[in-house]
Length: 400
Image 1 (spheres, helix red, strand yellow):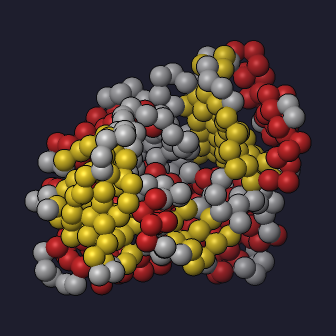
Image 2 (spheres, helix red, strand yellow):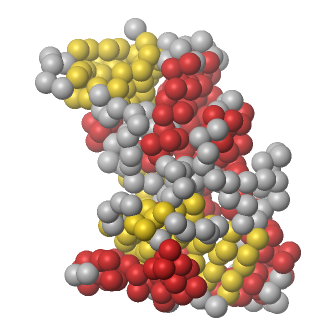
């Protein structure tokens, strides 16, 4: 009998398992893949995400992999450009964008070191339910006969297409349709910093990642998906030329693509019910937003810790376990509401007039730009930056 079974061993699952095990609880962590294993990702970890890794004693391990530090960001909307970086956050004056084949094994090893029982290549085939309450899982390796494992709580950290969520019938209670699609790949031979550049109905993202490679990604409206796919390579390069022509020259002259060009249509932005009798959801399983802000990994860390804290309260008998997990969902939703809406809005690649005015104001004022970089870092609440009175101050009286 385990205290908790966690399904999914990536950016949300490994941390929540690790944090529960560090409190002395018996935890089983299972995943159908074996690390190192790649997955679709923005790779980017903001300062508030790195702060969690630092608190958990894992940041040094990530730095030791040689992933390049990012200390400069260029962000633009059409002709409005801001360039700089956030203030240090608890001494962290950089960010990283590691490949998931680098980051996820570090998180998994952190869980193992904490005493978590880890089973890779393990497929959960069904949840065990007793009198309406989830009490465990059935699963195993390959075609072997499934075995049953029981726990006081089963946590689904298995992504936006979560098996756990489907099995318990977790409903989506807020959704905003995805507005764009993404194509991305990796290049060597490039020397660049972080770019997130929005042109006319298209976006280019560029940042250095592991193994001396650079991730280059583009976004365009979903309505252009079929047209783009008629010649993805030419279409991809044209977007880069349109939005960041100076980088496009380097891409053509010095870059060598070392992976296939991958195109994906992201799931809609959603909040999914993330608690119920004997179960919880964390990471993209319970909450997913447009990748344009690149907050998925950092949010997964924060929410894993939030959930671990509430589950620990329930397991310790300090409060009812189900109520504690319900409180986790409420706290998560309250903390992410503005970021969720912001990501969905800029994911449309055409900003409403107020946001357009804010970007224009930031491009001409270093103080406003620094505040925005601090929002990205997690040092300044978005609600404070985008408060009507602050927006009016920045744009000279335009009402939010």
